[in-house]
Amino acid sequence: MGRRKHTALLPPDSPAAPYVSAAWHDGLTDKQRVFCEHYYRYRNGTQAYKFAFDVVKMTYDMCRQEGARLLALPHIQVALKERYKLGSAETGVDIAWLLNHFMTIAMADPRELIGLKVGCCRFCWGEGHGYQWREREYLEQLAKVEWEIVCARRDRQPIEGFRYPDLAGGLDYNATAPPHPSCPQ
Image (cartoon, rainbow, N blue to C red):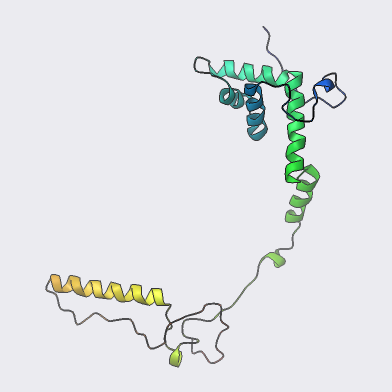
């Protein structure tokens, strides 16, 4: 048996037109339907054949040949064409929409995509322009210092050098607030 060339989908005016039905998988066996669905998603006949059929004792080349043979069948081509139409209708996406979408992205003005926002620093709105914490950060820093003190006591080292975090600036830092006009930082 000679090698079959992979053929494209049939045009609507082809002799296989009688196979067209309202449901894209009418007239297909369950395995052919699974093959078509897998091929529709991944566009690989060999993988689709391996997915749909029992290929335990088949080589890769045999699967490739069988996948190409299935893709050459007129009713499989018609079913795939109907599945493509159904997929476009389901998503509302067709080639013209994709081209328009990608051209819009390619021709976009970078100045509209990029912006610079300046917010306040940790000292802007702190009490007396002191460092302002978020509550979680303050508690984590406090726990870290306390753990270091516990470890120092366990190892019988001096504990005078450890400093607790300064809460003078307060809590509830908000990075989205505007900068304070008289912030020293």
